[in-house]
Image (cartoon, rainbow, N blue to C red):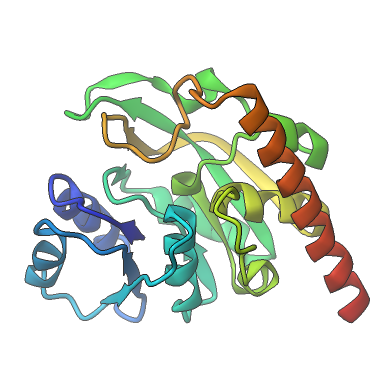
Length: 233
């Protein structure tokens, strides 16, 4: 989980996660310098499975997730935003697909800040398998993703540029090297509010030149990583 000034929703989200974890599991939280009560709320939960790390990378929120990812020690990894709510069967439904090196994504219920239903993520954009398809129209939403340690090791380190999002980066690498599994089942309440950093589930405000540059950089960086790994593995 990556956090930044998330005091309003963080407790509800963490509680929805912890109830699904085993005693030996961990919740890795990377905080990007919160100035509100986010860290105090987390520490008040007093759960030994929670481990907090500070993010010192200046390249944006995707690298806050990278910092969390670096500190994970488990075989199976779930990305989580700070303001959503996991449905009670999320881990149970996704875990069987993680017995192999799969990148697993699910549908989600889109809600407002009060968790009132507004639709499904799949109504905004439905996943279609393939590298080029997802380079131009990605459905990857980090908060719906889970993957294995082998995929983590393949994806780290992230490119230093701030233009690459963590979910697109890992998802596209998996289209090239591993396997992407899509579950047509909502497994989280995906909360949309004015302070969201992710644009999934809403119309993009990015300009055309930015989108062209973003996809060009993403194309170059993923192919470089893939070719480099293929020659060294």
